Structures are given as structure tokens and as C-alpha cells.
Image 1: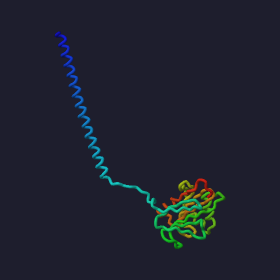
Image 2 (image 1 turned 180 degrees about the vertical axis):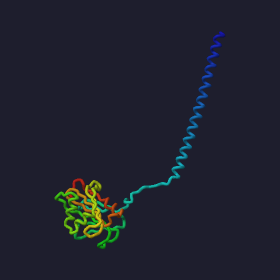
Image 3 (image 1 turned 45 degrees about the vertical axis):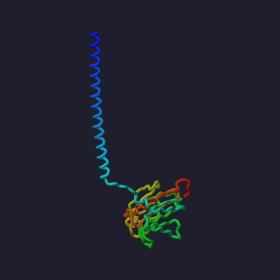
Image 4 (image 1 turned 120 degrees about the vertical axis):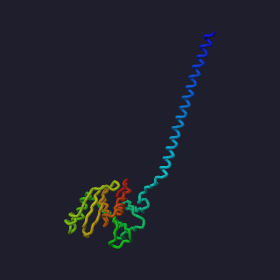
Length: 211
């Protein structure tokens, strides 16, 4: 009987010690979790305050509010700043002008000219053909830089000349699609706004089009 009491007492003691250890472990675990949570809350507050301190920068494309001209006959679009003027010569439906001010003959602006290329010449061949007709062709060639470009999927060349047939600097895009040549030109070759306008040129009738 005494042995049974001793064994029972020992079991109760061991169980009590085990339970006490489990309680201590649980208590330490809870304190550890609370400590981690407090650090997370503090970090979030720091992050939130840091976000509030950082300036909010919104990036927008300056061309988003530009006007869009669509030529339904030749299937292209081009954007130009608000306040610019569209010039459409009555005697030449293939030609369109885009100007910061009303057209006055020698105004600074951009021309878009659509020409026939049923001979399937390359952009560089077309440029050479146009300039071979001029009296000062050698002078133009010596003052010309030609680079290949691709404007919204339309291959061609960019031509920058310090002296064309008028004796003034010009920049041209010769772009080819099917049997059409699209010539974009400006007498402000280093004007960034003019360059941005020219690079908004896009064909909108790639599919099912006979242009």
C-alpha cells in the first residue's frame, strides 16, 4: 500500500513539474509573439510616415492632351499640341501641314506628304531620286546625315541636312508602307517638340488596307 502511495505521489509530482514547464514555455512564447508584433507595428508606422514624407510624383505623357489628326484617305494619324494649326492645301490633298502658328509661307512647322511608290524603291533610293534632280545635289549630300529608323512599325530613314535645296537645315522622315511613301519634314531639325510630333505618326489601316 505504501508503495502505491509513493508511486502515485511521484506521478503527481512529475505531472505537476511538466505542466509548470509547459505553462512557462507558453508564457515565454506569448511574450515573444507580443514583442514581434510590437516591432511589426512600429515598422509599419515608420513605413507609413516615410511614405507620407515622400513627394508624390505622377508621370504623364505630355502628348496625352494633344490633338489627333486622322487622314482617312491615306490611313494615318499624327498628334500635335493644342493651339497648333492644321493646314490643308486645296490643290494638294496628299499634303498636310501642322504649325505652331497660322501658316504664312515660311512658317516653322511640319509637313506630311504622301507619294506613290509603285516602283517599290527603298527609302534611301527615293531620297536620292528626289535630290538628284537638284542643281546643288553634291552640296546637299556633303551636308546630310542618314540613319535607319522605325516609327511605330513603319521602316524608313531619317535624313538631317544642314543645307537642302533652299539652303536651310531640314529633317525628313522617309517611311514606306506597301506602295506608298510617307514623307514627314520640318525646317526645325533640332526642335524637340517637332521631333515628338513627327514620332507620333502611325498608320491605322495596316489590316485590310489598299493604301
